[in-house]
Image 1 (cartoon, rainbow, N blue to C red):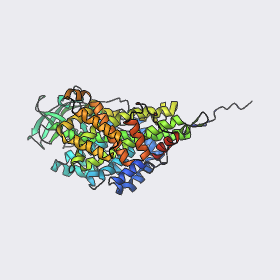
Image 2 (cartoon, one colour):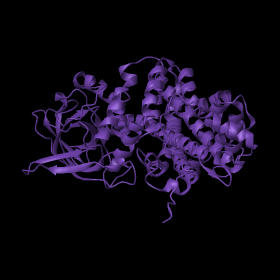
Image 3 (tube, rainbow, N blue to C red):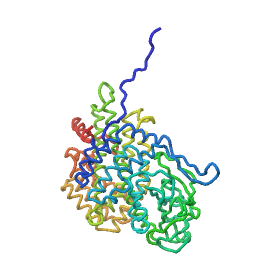
Image 4 (tube, rainbow, N blue to C red):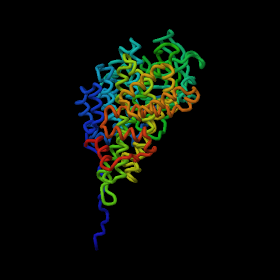
Length: 553
């Protein structure tokens, strides 16, 4: 009898593991040093090594494979409204809290803290995205809650804590807590002004007083957070909108009647529990000024939009790195994929997209840190943040599809990393305002503070040292701002796209390798290529230099 074994495994790509996510990323490490966060580099190097270990990589996969489960009642019939998670979810949150990514710039207010936190968030977002949601919301809630002095005296230590406390207890009984958001209702979506949840006073009225909330939230992010900031109307369905701090438990320790109706069955972001809830006279405390609920919650949303940019930049980075790793190990037609000219073009284009997104997110973090004292930084924060959320999030969707194609059929199966990256990519474009909302917010920001546009365009011209292609794009942007209001609104996407590409081009010219910068400008502003990746006009060796600069492993 002959040996009929036919299964010999070869030309398959090993898992990408045992690498340092920070140490092999010269773009983020250089930006960290330049923008004042170099004091955190050693901590990030240790963190990057930990994130590259197979155990942590497996946590990311398992947290999404074993989705959260809703338990509305106990065995004996009591309403409990609990969501249980796979242990990997809690392990990921422990990593995030250990790096204080929910609070770093507030807990350690020193120069460069915003860029330090952004770099750390960027690293973990390459491993798993769903666990970032409660971290982002907790981070964004801190500036709002700090204005409530008495309440924050108790909340602050628990928000700043470096440990993860997974126990489902009243927040005062815990060492560490997380904060969520409750804005979206089924009839309103992005139009928060359409909300109909009603809040009635119980003891006293006004800021700090207790109210009972009755209503419904269509998307209630991370229902197992210890409290949520919720928008509701004062007194009646046509009353003024205000913002409330609504905990999971009442002050007497009983469960607050926030009834989880179901968990959303989402395309991606499956490790994170997004829910639909009903408030049945749930206790809440009025925060901020009465009738100023939307400005209060928008302050929170501005920070979450920055995290959408960081998260999508991380997905771009992960897609590029996985594609490059694959092509360095996979052969076809007699040579490695990474040695084939057309594949080099694709890899180089992905590398440029990732580099430009990374530079932009770090510059935005720097602007957030200085916005209160520097008018130019404030203009970057107000105008470029929504534009960047619009553009970078959309480019992540395209890039993950391209990187999956680099992997071929192996990229389309769930055992590898590409399917999860691809499903994850769209959420940041939708959460905290979809594309149209972001582009309209760019125009609103300019209309509210007209000097912002002039400051920004002058700054981009200065950074680009009057590069002809950048100067031509700036002239087009200025011309668009002079158009009639209705036409400008119709072209809001073109304006936002042009603004982001010009900002990225200016940052590349100022901080990237000259060859990379010129390739980016020629392809994005010179319009040498279409929207597909892999149409750069460079020689094969130049393409190789471009994609190898971005990953030093």
